[in-house]
Length: 116
Image (cartoon, rainbow, N blue to C red; front, side, top):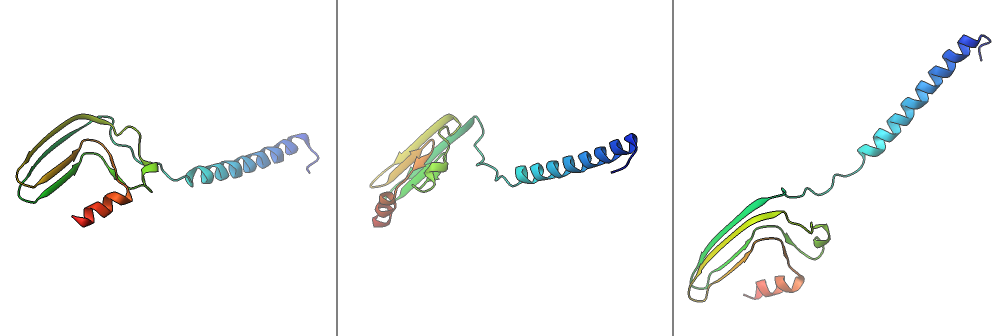
């Protein structure tokens, strides 16, 4: 350590600056390693669905997201839907499924789809 009082302050200030830089770098690294969260849909969006099916045709329309059981935990409770308009024309043995928001489907839904 230097003998003069002014020299001691210079050394102490340099050491404090170096330690503050190391601490800031560590905090910056830690904050930068966080993974970004899921992007949420816009606060207000409009969904307009129109479908026409005939014969043995099928139409499935989902205005939000489709989740399987293993991804449903990541889903937002509020899908951010604003106005929802749905219109369908069906004839013969056709079927139309319209979901204005999010649809959660389980394994049994996949089995039913494959049997049709």
